[in-house]
Every structure is written in structure tokens, then in C-alpha cells.
Amino acid sequence: MTVSLTSSAISSGFAPFNAVSFQSTEQFHGAVRAQLAKDIEVLFAYAKLPSPLVDACRYVMTGQGKLVRPLMVASAFASINSGDSERKDERNDDIDMLNSDLDSLLENDSDYDMSRRAALAVELLHTYSLVHDDLPCMDDDELRRGQPTAHIAFDEATALLAGDVLQTLAFEVLTAEMPTFAPFDAHIASQLLAIFAPRARRMVSGQMLDLNAEASTDIVQNDLEAIHRDKTGALIEAAMLMGGVCAGATAPQRMALQECAQHIGLAFQVQDDVLDVTMTTDTLGKPAGSDEKLDKSTYVKLMGVDDATSYAQSLFDDGRAAISRELSNNQDNTVKNNDALLALIEWLWSRKK
Figure 1 (cartoon, rainbow, N blue to C red):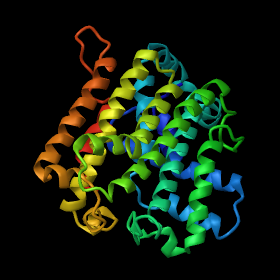
Figure 2: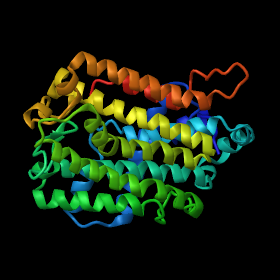
Figure 3: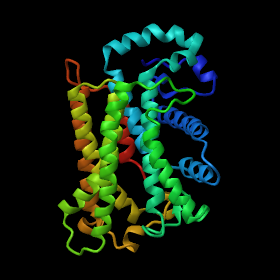
């Protein structure tokens, strides 16, 4: 169920992202981030983790991250939802209800609440991977998201356990009985787990392939893409598909989301490699030039900055085209300019960190 943002929702100081009628990327992303921040606190209250474990988890989950993956969940959910004529009719019928009882309406919107669970899940899993990647036994980084990494702010054992528990919570949150969430939808939850679990495994496999590649001197582009389709792309693929499933995506829509995500996931990594050598540490929020320091195999090392930038742009274009074909369901085969997922792709292309 999707409803439009009204003055009563604005005056409450918080507008859940499915209550926002998409007007701008900034407005929509702000609503997603606000919802996620609220849900993170609900989750930690539910989990009852001991200190300093809960402190470390809150520290890494509430830093200044881009939140790309939860934004993908929300954007895919919004894009598929907005194309459903039945849901559009429901939205018009529910505007009066929103004025009188916003909280009650949202508490009974299980599709939306499953998308909240999915957004939490992908951000929990992604953050766990960052905490572990930063450990001395991996990349041994001291700065992440503009602040000291978990093992620096706390200690190595606490950081390790924080990563462990974030990974387990990523799966638990899909079916946990938590305050402010409608009861989980078992049918949707089973589909989300079927999407999420194998891609979580692929993410770890990709990290191992990446470590293996550091010792190799003859990596070619196909090898590099195989690494990053798993290490980076798998979770991006999961995020878009999970958002679509929560919105009731059809089989063709799911195929389009998967194709789009595969292009965007690879584009995102190529772009990261370029930013690592073209931006400063202050801008990135993590050490610039770290790939070169660790002698990692990157697209810049393989192709040079200019060719890598062009390649990233072509991948973004392919991703945009893949989803546009499915979203263009009117007679003149055009896509509305204010589509949340297409806006997210534009935002990603223009990012500087």
C-alpha cells in the first residue's frame, strides 16, 4: 500500500518512505535514511546485546555511510509499487485515512514493513563485511565512513564479534517479532531468504577471490569481473530483488531488476576503483589510495582512469536501460522522470565517495 505525503505526516517530524510521493531524490532518500535509523534502534532494543558489543554495533551502523543498499531496496520497492495500477487506486482511497491515523495505517502495511526488514537486512550484512574487511588480518584499515574503524574505536575481539552478530541479525530481522513492525509475511519472507542467503554466500566467496588475486600478477578483466560480481554485485543484486519482491514484482520485473542490478553492481565497483585514486581521504571518508597500498587488482590498474571511467558509465547506461524497458508500460513507451530507481542510478553515477 502506497500513500501520499500530507501535511499531518510532515508535522509529525517523520515521514516513512512509503508515505512520500516521490518529488526529489533528496526527499525520498531522506525518508529512507530516517526510517532506517529508527529501525536500527528498534532492532538493537529487541536484540538486547551486552556491552561493549551493542556499543560497537551501534557505532558501525550509525556512521556516515551512503546506505546505498537500503536505498536500492526502497527504490526498487517504490518503482515497482508505483507502476501497479491497483496500488495507485488504493493510494487515492487511503489519503483520508492517512490524515486521521497514519501510524495505524502503516502498522498494517505488511508489504512496506517487509521492505523495511529487507533494507535493514542488506545494511546489516554490508556493515558486517566492512567491519571484517577492516580488521588487521584483512585490509588493516584505520578509517571507515569518516571515523576510526571498529577495531580501533573498541578492540579487535569486539569488532570481530560485532561483525559476527550483525551477520546473524541480517537474517533474523526478516522474521523477528519486533515493535513498530507488522507481523512478518511468511510468503514474502521465504522469497527474501531464498534471494538473500545465496548472495550473502557469494559476497564472502568474492572476498576470498579478491584476497587470492592480490598474490597474482596476471589478472585479466574477466577475472576481475568474476570477483566483483560476487564481492560487490551479489548484495546489490539482492537489494534490488528484495525490494521488488516486497512490492509484488512480476517475473519479468524481477528479471529486469536482476539484469539492472548486475550492471549497476559492477559499475559501482569500477567507480569505487576510480574514486580511490581521484578523491581525497577527507572526501571518501576512508584512506584514499588504499588499493594501491595493498597492491590490489583494480580496474584503474588494468585499464587506466579514463578507460575505467568510460567503462563505468557504459555499465550505468546498461543498468538504466535494463530497468527502463520494464518500467515503460505506457503507449508511447516512455518512463516517468520521477521514478525512484532511475533517480537512484543517476545519484550513484554522480557520487564522489
